[in-house]
Image (cartoon, rainbow, N blue to C red):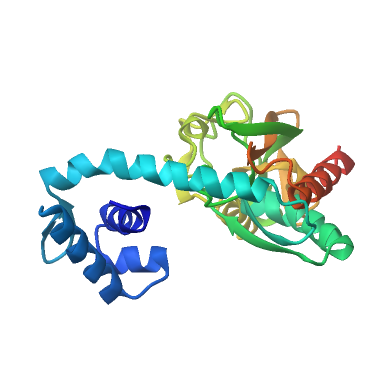
Length: 289
């Protein structure tokens, strides 16, 4: 089996549908269907059980996952190493970050870099999920979590802080929470549990057990909007919340630090275009200290 067939097989196995695989591969659905049929005929095996809703792997298909993923890793390694030899200040960089870090730090850094190097194009992805750099879903990520994969280079950009905030309107109507009362009598806006399980127990060390959870989201930007709309009390990064005139910092002596990391694949880290982006991003964070 060649890699071209393997990538169609993996796309269907991961998406579960021809349509999902077609979107991932940027081809039409009929092409995906034909390639799967051709692969099954070449191997004399049925790889998928076709149900009305999904393509489900058969035992034969399950045995093919491991070898196909090995082929995928080899192909991606070739792609990364070739890209790593590129010394031109041109081309595309895929950048993954969060919405709040993107707005305050990453976008200004990109703007400065592109004024100096207009031949570099950026594809920016903001998501609560950790982007897979190994599969080239991104070339560089600016995140608050440090991955432990051995093929990734992680550089600490800054240590920032979060604090506890509410809108002026909320504080005027409900008063400020008192330390040690676990937000009794107050409404809370918080991250959804899958996004940040540890954040549910407390806000900056103050227990949340007596508060009433009224709003959940995976987006820091939406937490800002919830606080500004008067939904309740929440935990927000100080680098932005301190400058929102409609927000009040409550329990102002309470804060918690968090680290910001720049993460890139080792094969791409030293390319010329990556280095100028990394320098711009690092400089933007350094100026904020």
